[in-house]
Picture 1 (spheres, rainbow, N blue to C red):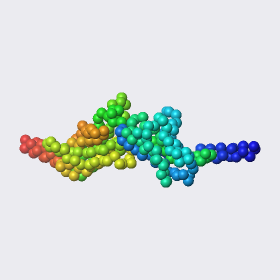
Picture 2: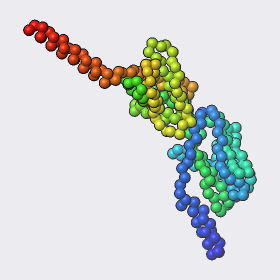
Picture 3: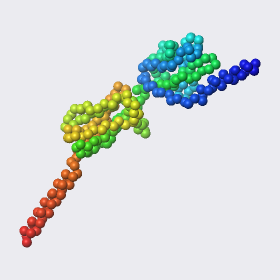
Picture 4: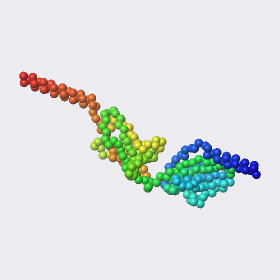
Length: 271
């Protein structure tokens, strides 16, 4: 009896050692409503005869999605097989979710092992992007107008705002951003640059740096953001060129000198 109790205590302690491990960050995967996704977890029967897929929505209790006990795979009742599919391979277990809905958004993680020792293998946060529920309203560009000298570089900024009271900015790395230019007196737009959503820069502002070589680079620069099948244009930034200050000062100095000469001639001519 003492030996059995000792063995039980040791097994319980061993199963709890996983809580002392350094926590790992859970990766993020973004999918659209109506799409499909496959979640994978490394593992095989060699690691044990027990495997579980769990779902934990934000602020809710843990839910068991699928189990594999002694090579028998089974889905829980609340996860219908017309949208969920659980498969076991040689080196991984897969959970396939079809026709994704907003309620599928949650953290999914898997657990595997034996009857006495189990550990969590991996986890992923599944974010569901619902275009219909988004409140994106307009694209804001700054500055409204700028004037630079020829050869200088101008920095144009573009941000995507929502209709909330605080005008929340969205990460533009989640969208496709395009820049266009309309020259002064021109009615058509010229495509300049595109920023695809594969960027790892989680910035709320898209920046375009453009060197203004001459007057052909001036005009109104427009930022356009493609999201949920729509194209949102900003109001544009007016870019003009200004003459160098040194040239203006030289002209003013010459005019001033000419005025002095004329006044002196008039004064001496009276004498």
